[in-house]
Image (cartoon, rainbow, N blue to C red; front, side, top):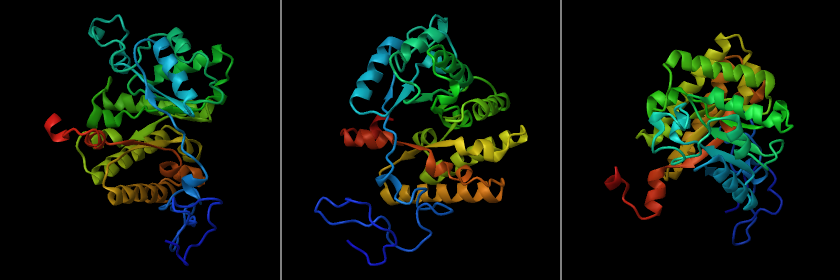
Length: 319
């Protein structure tokens, strides 16, 4: 329905399926695009600025997954998202005895820079962004990615993408950690330092609530653990001497989306508001992009239980 209290111009040409014009925003402020960004970071949100569309993909050899990447890009994808196999996730080569039976099963096997070359062959890394779901060995995989790109003539400063690199949620939920917590957080901080100085278009960590929700948490727990982890990384980076306004704009987030619509809306709104206020008031961020991370760089996945229900499975009987 139309509302006389709408406070911005409607997006040109945006209408309902019935042809009714829709205003960009309804109700009182703060409006989207205004601190603390409770209603979103952009004035028109995603009507005027679309999400990057990337399908999570990875299986078999680097060549197998490269063919899949090209299929997805031809189908309309605007970025690529890499799923690694279990040996790679745990920092093991494919010929390690522990890798027997797991190579290439749940993702792509990457052991060398040559594998990276095969994985991204024919993809313009100067324009296509890459997401890599890797945590414990994240610094190694990033180094291999940079070496591969520079070997292909793309400067590291032009590379754009995201490294998951959220080790704290591994201890809480996914359990794919390699090293103890303290040195692991040091590695996360080292990656933040490197990308801040060398890769200005790269997101060095994707602070992840998705796995926490999949492990059985409520929406409130997902939000609490995710923000706490994010603040821990901010404090670790600042303790290492980094300026919050230099690194905070490149922090990103990965949340779950369940099927309780209003609860999920409330969760995202609370995340934006809390992060913005804490970054400004507690950590002294003055660059607005430093306290817009929750809303400016967010990755969303449906809850697996929701997907199973849509497919007709009873999730409780499968767990």
